[in-house]
Image (cartoon, rainbow, N blue to C red; front, side, top):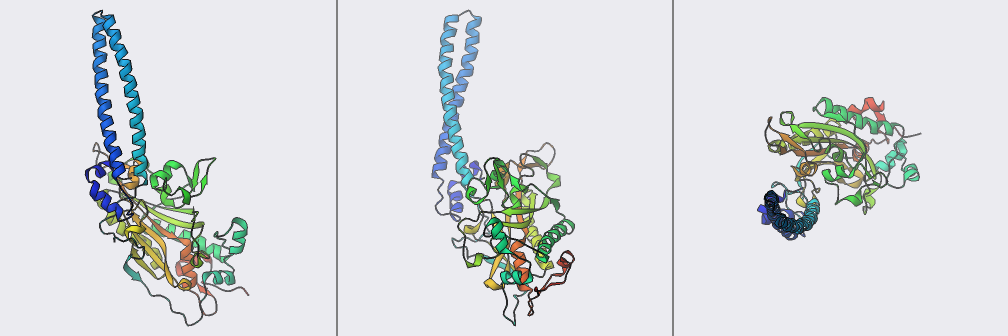
Length: 427
């Protein structure tokens, strides 16, 4: 959530930056509400000062045995109290409107983010490896999954509907191996604290992370329990220290978590969405950091490198892209994507979005730190990134490592989990 003081003091600049994300944004209504709020506060404070003064006068009149004058003043106090109560009610309503307005505003984009209304205007920062070249007709992961006996999407659809996965045999071992390998690597090599959180969260958690109210239609909700199914462990990890004041000497705090993720993905369809490319349910290892404000962009680069480590270890060709303003998530000030090459689609797909949310989530979740004992609490900066999402990574491993005989080579770090060096077609 943005700081109303920042908006009040720099309305034109804030609106200009927000319009690089959404040209329809106007801060006029918010500024009008804020002006009304401040006028009401001044009126209420003036009336309360009058009430306090009258209270002292009444006490003096009673001590002087001037009961009739005291009763008249008491009656006047009653009218004053009713007026204060009415103004407080109006003030509370306006403050709620201001809160609701701020809750729907996105974060301010960082100055390094490309300004564009076109998602295609991302900036490619670097690449790792080369696209594979095939001397034989290559297959899609859907064909490979069926021939290798490791995917059963028809039965998944029978159980839950379309766009749900069902891994079987070595496919299940490969999927679980990816999760285990990534968790172990980030814990042992990059110093993250492993977390296994709940897969559901309450409305307060989803608001703090930035999912609510704007994206309520994209998440699964259990109305009887007032709980939401996890769309990404970012939501859960962002709330680890909600309403806490952290010790600045312990920052940055680095967490990694495995969760299944659930998304409605309403309105998405097309040939490129077949198979495991875009699912209602998928697995992901998430990386999350709580940092001091002045260190957050250095930590962002480090977070990108930590996620890249996995792709390098698996020897998967990928590229690193800086997203433009129009493609930022609501809570993000800057996002860098890692994209793997999918031969059957002849395009890159994102397997990790790595973002610096600055103090946007911290304000919503009241997450602060002290630089030293007794110092004024400050809001932390929060960063998140997939480390990584498995479904598209699973696709990239299958398609990029396929062989002329229909087999698929398993990357060396995953062989111990799968119990094989390659997957071979069913006979």
